[in-house]
Amino acid sequence: MGVGGKVALTAVGLVLAVAAVVAAKTAMFVPPAQVDPASVKLAPARPFDVARAADHLAQAVRFQTVSHQDRAEDQPAEWDKLHAWLQATYPEAHKVMTREVIAEHTLVYTWPGSNPALPPIVLMAHQDVVPVTPGSEGQWTHPPFDGVVADGAVWGRGSIDDKGSLVTLFEALDAVAASGFKPLRTVIVVSGHDEEVRGVGARAAAALLKSRNIKAQFVLDEGMAVVADHPVTGKPAAIIGTAEKGYATMKVVAPAVGGHSSAPPKDGGGVVALSRAVVAINDHAFPMRFQGPGADMLKAIAPHASPVVKIFAANTWLFSPLLVKVTAKSPAGAAMLHTTIAPTMLKGSPKENVLPQDATAWINYRIAPGDTSATVMARAKDAVGALPVQLSWAKTPDEPSAVSSTNSDAWKTLAGLAADESKAPVVPGLVTAGTDSRYMGGVASDVYRFQPLVLKVDETKIIHGTDEHISLDNVGRMVRFYQRLVETAASR
Image (cartoon, rainbow, N blue to C red; front, side, top):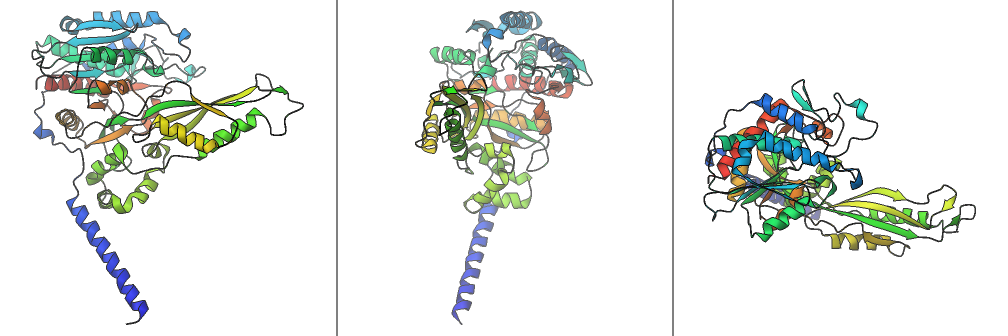
C-alpha cells in the first residue's frame, strides 16, 4: 500500500474514532438542572378571582412611581400612595406580616415562621417603573398610566415590569393568609423603590437582612419567564435565571486645549482622540465562550430539540466553536456568551464652532460571570494604548453575580413548580440585564430570577416599551404560582 493509501486509512480511522466518541458521549449525555415535578410535593392551587386581581393591578399602574434618570423629577408622593393602597387592598397579608419602610420607600415585610431554625425564603418585586418615551404617548393603545383592563389584558407602564409581580404576589399572600395558613419557614418580601436606576433600596434591604444574620434558603426576583417559542425548539421553555451579569459604565475623557473651530489642531483635537479610543475599545471585544449559565440553557433544553442539537450539546469538546457561531447570530444570543461593550453617550462642545476642552464618552458594560470590572478596565486600557484619553468608572461597578445551584432543594422546589405550572421543560439561564436581586448574594447562596408568565420572544419588546400590557391569563398564572410557591416552600 502506498503512502497515500496509508494516510487515507489513518484519516478514516481518526474519523471513526471521533464518531465513536461522539456517539458514546451522546448516549451517556445527562442534561443539567432536570427536575421531575412528580418528585416534589407541591401545594395545590387555591381558587381566586382573576378579574379582581386584574383590577387591582390596573389600580397599581395608576400610581406614577416613575424612576427618572434625574431623580429630581421623581414624585415621592406616588410611592406613599402606593404604600397606603397596598395596606388597604391586602389587609389579611398585612395582619400576619410586619412592615418596615427603609431608604425612604423600600418595603421589607416579614411573615414569621413557626420554626425559626429553618432558613427563610425571600420574594422580591420592585415598585418603580421606567418613564414613557416623550412624544410616544399617542402611540399607546391606552394611555400608559390609565391602568385599563381591556381586550383580555391589563394595559399600562409597569403591568409586567414589575408591578405585575408585586400585585400578584400580594394577591397570593393575602389569599394564603386568609386561609389560615401558618408557615413553618419565615417568608420575607422585599420591594425596592428604585430598581430602574440601580438605586439604594435593595442595597439597604440586603444590608438590613445581613445585619440580622439572615441566611435565606433562596431568593426569587424577576428576570426571566416562560418563553412560548424558545429559539432552539420553537416550543415553550421555562427559563430560570441562575445568575446575572454585572453592570458598569466607563467614562472615557479626552482632554483638549479647546479654542475656535476655524483653527483646529493638526491632530483633530479631543473629539478625534475620543472617537479613536471608543472605536478601539469597541473593536477589542471580549471573546465568546460556550460556558456558564448561557451554555447550560442549551444543554438542558437539548433533549427537547432536534437530535443534532443533542449531539452538539453532548459534545461541546468538539462542537463549541460551532455552538458559539450559531448562538451568536442574534445580539441576544451573543450577549449570553461574553461581556458586552456598548458605547451609549457622547459629549463634546456646547456649540458647533467651538472646539471642546474635553470630549467625553460613556460605555456601558454588562459583565459576564468569569470576568470582573478589573479585567474590563485592563482590557480597555490595553485597547486605547497610548491614545491621550483618561478611563474611569462613572459609578462603582456591580460585579457579576455568583451562579446559583441547579441541584439544591431550593432549585428542585422552584423548578418543580415551574414545570408543573408551565408543562414545559425548565432550564437555567443567564440574565443579561440587571435586577435588585444582584445585592442578595450575601443573603442567600441560591438567588433565582423568574416571573411565572408566558411570553413569546417578540412580546418581550413591550417591557420598557410602548403598549406594555399583561394578559389576564398571565395574571392568573402569576397569582397561582406565587400562592403555591409560598405554601410549598414555607411548609417544608
